[in-house]
Image 1 (cartoon, rainbow, N blue to C red):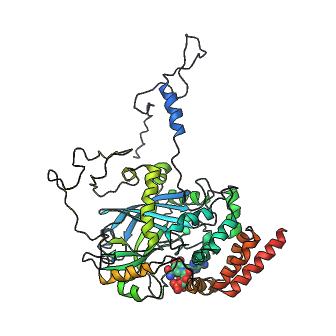
Image 2: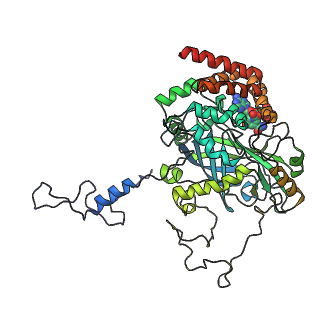
Image 3: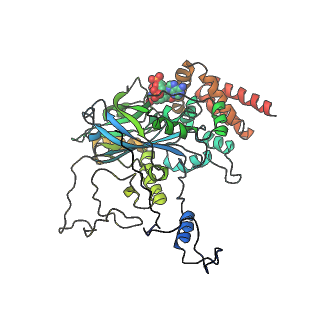
Length: 507
Ligand code: NDP
């Protein structure tokens, strides 16, 4: 016998719970006739309904405003407990609940979701040792390595301050003068810049992190979530077409896939290197404009991530979700990468501005682990009981607290004075966004050995650049041709030819 779900008709109430007669009409003076007279200020429902509507919007994220999200599960398939004490990575079969948010970067909340852009690839893993956030991107490298350039980079990808239009001149003006972005540009203008859906994107940490073990030993790692759906892409023409006819197609694709039980999944891999290897490695491990070539540091399989549940309410679950590279469990620690260090401040600061100072208490962000953080009190929206009468000052002997002995950020390699730390400090001291020929070596490998080995990829890359650059001021073109010639002379010349041909077509 099948059970019939009992649907109870809810009784409408005011927000304070008082049952209310009619949500569909205002209160007004009446002398008994059916026509309504003057409206009354006592109409709490009308006033609250209008006032609340005026306050429905919260500040939009400056970047990554447009997103899709899903609940899911992470499962360890290959044990790496010899590398980290993080419990959620320990023991084959260990499962943790997750919340993901995949976003475009430049456009506003209502922008098309299938445009050429980097995808933010954020994941919250709810573990017994607190939340672990991975705030990754769908390309393996980033545009800058000095965090002070972050606002400038993003503004150059957004709207012009005078015209309020996306502006190719601004875009290329920034990149020609900050050429450490060349490697990320190579990825952005490859076919992967226009993924077929978010199910067909990878998530890369870009930054180097540390996996730390109980004894304080650590390895440097990069994380890779590789799509089990493959990396299907749209051509530039397909993406442009979809932007017009179906600007929400990535959102619909993910929602429908999950709703019909076609759960997308990713395989988590790491690359790992010892501190000693880092000291002599050709590439600065704190430079997120560079990858670690697979031949040097092969991928090590770790686990499987599956998206299996749609948000029941987009605003509650996804818009209010807040992710930060500073949210790490014991066993995972940041490296000295300056962009990572700066993001560890900037992301929680953005969440405090958008969601209020108690955003960690919202259901979508709330850890499943016990939280006892009594020196963070009060503020808007304190909904966790606010620690009752517990001391709100440190070192109380009336109610003492105990502290964990697990190894966190104080692990060796984080400026605590060991031999490796001296090397870390020296490496960061010598760090700058000055561009040298070294910056073009990995882009050249990508051009020759990755795009060059796949039919049509070099041609579409040139066409994608030309289609964008032709919209920029012609006086900027030469600088762009020269920049791509540093990757490979044939590339610079191909772009020159394609841009001049497009310009002629459009004349
Ligand atoms: P590999 O040949 O071992 O790896 C190349 C990687 O490029 C592939 O594994 C794949 O990454 C990615 N890739 C393949 N086809 C495309 C495409 N059409 N568009 C975009 N990316 C593609 O070489 P190396 O590790 O020596 O790296 C060579 C270059 O490849 C690097 O300079 C970098 O630009 C790029 N790359 C390297 C990655 C790394 O972490 N080593 C990661 C991604 C790209 P995946 O398997 O992650 O999908």
